[in-house]
Image (cartoon, rainbow, N blue to C red; front, side, top):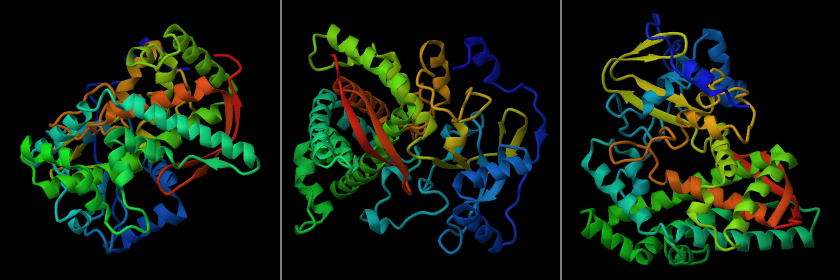
Length: 441
């Protein structure tokens, strides 16, 4: 269960006068230290154990370490890790940390991959192009707000029909959910874009296909926001490839995984809530107003994003000498030092979240909503909004919306389901093993 309101208020802030301590940990010998940490991270310990081992060793959620890749890819692998819910948000404060070229961590991929341009993800908010690009992204989303639910709903309907066919014709064969990425891409950019993408045997490159099929979108970028046409196209392609494809490829399977593993009791509760609202709406296409009445459904989405955030890493370089406070101590970070956050530990902080390692579907219902300020999946607090001045995901609200729509469609159709989970280099893989059709609507 979630903490009580008083418990939340009593435990979310550290004492105002915490001792200032030196940051524990070290970087080891030049070259050898980063190599050792890389071996520990990938082979000897594994990702999560790498961080937990050092938390236990130093008795601190703030410490110095090296982050991969290190030599010979990154010239400087030194970071200060902030791994609790109180220190982690320093990475969102763009008045104190610089976000220049830190999207991928301690190294910057070649801009040859993006037409020689640094796409928006690698820009600091202080750069003029960041404002232009992010404003354009907001305009793209706002101009299509009335299309997201119908388009995504149609994709989901087709997906579940195909899923049922596969399970009925070959029951022993599990059915995975890769096509959901296409649903989200279509919702964001429209069928004309996704249908025009090149196949394996076609001639145009993906960039050329985007350039030709998004003419009205690129016209807006150049005429309204003053962007170069090819730069806008590379940003659009990056947004579709990473933010849309890769982001939702981890988000939706993660949601299905945790709901599937939660079992029939949560399924029954979700089905009851969703079907009650659907009946009250007359059984028609669900509106945003109707979705907002489904408090458990929304809480389940937030809980999935808390326990398995789609992008686990955040980086930022200190613009000045700053002091961060964990639950137990204060630490000074010097100007120019790289700060690193591993989000799954921050959002599973046991001093904030009771039963933090468990999936609790109703965690954010009622008074539990106060805990949303510690949900950081969007590169910002869930209670904050993305702006041109920050690096929070411009599609933050859309991701939550489409995740809720997916649960609604799932539990309108089915009473319960079973899955088989797996692990991918980026996120989880999920396979549907069975679906039990709804016995009532």
